[in-house]
Image (tube, rainbow, N blue to C red; front, side, top):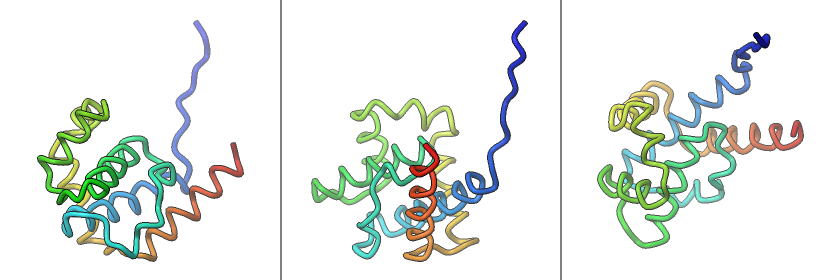
Length: 125
């Protein structure tokens, strides 16, 4: 039997998940990506689910659509990422993001933190 170890997430990855969820929670609350946060790319997100959700938000925004939960779910189905969301709890994951936003706040400071962490991940690759 091979000796496989599951590595615990680093503190950097752990904190990035909370920041990402808070930022997504802000976008859900505002039903779109605020213009001040438009500099983020989906690849800046550490977590693959958060990356997929942000990509769906970007696609909706590019189409001029308002990002309500139903539209986000439809876009994720088109992108082939909805199953990832279902495995993470479905709509409850959206509400976790909103709760995180209400607890931590959000905004450009967190978006800059995500960008900073993305740069560190890219250097480490």
